[in-house]
Amino acid sequence: MPEKFKPKMGSGDLGFTDLFGGRRVPKTHCRVKLNALADDLTALLGLLKTGLKDRRTKEEISAAQAALVRAGGLIAGMKGSLKDETAALETVINALAEEIKPPKRFVLPGENETEALAHLARAKTRVCEILAWEIKAKAAAVYLNRLSDYLFLVALKSAR
Image 1 (cartoon, rainbow, N blue to C red):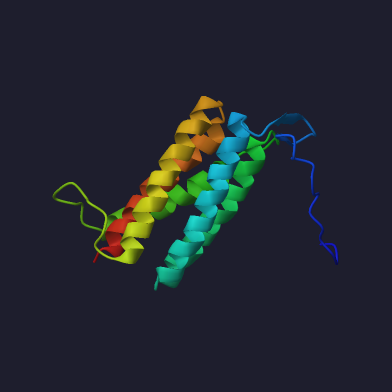
Image 2 (cartoon, rainbow, N blue to C red):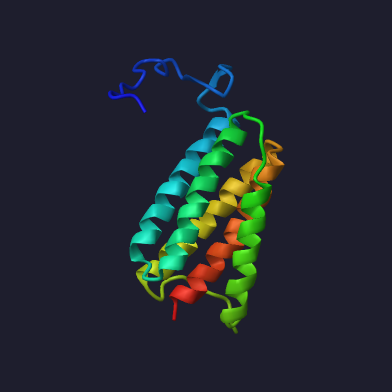
């Protein structure tokens, strides 16, 4: 990391930004919108972590944040996959599903702040997934689908 960081000021003042590889696109481009939503989701997961007491869940959320950063690269046009991250999340989902009783009724967020934040993050994840499918970013879309499932379970666990 450089000793000093200076943002590249003014480069987006005409409504354009760079994708990976230097391609300039309007800031209204669906890839830019999706990356903005994924950034928002990453920050929201950080807020969710502050209310969690379980160290393991905090680590899982941190791993999800890191995966979202990698997904952002894929969305912007980098090569790669999220297979390992998706498989790891599936393992966590399976373990968590074993310890949580399924809901007996439709779940309405609001049992407590942490549970509500988990549901908010889950809902934002679903929006990101929809946009990922729209731009045909399958690896990101599949990961986001799993992340939504995981966050639903975190919300259920947090409601106790």
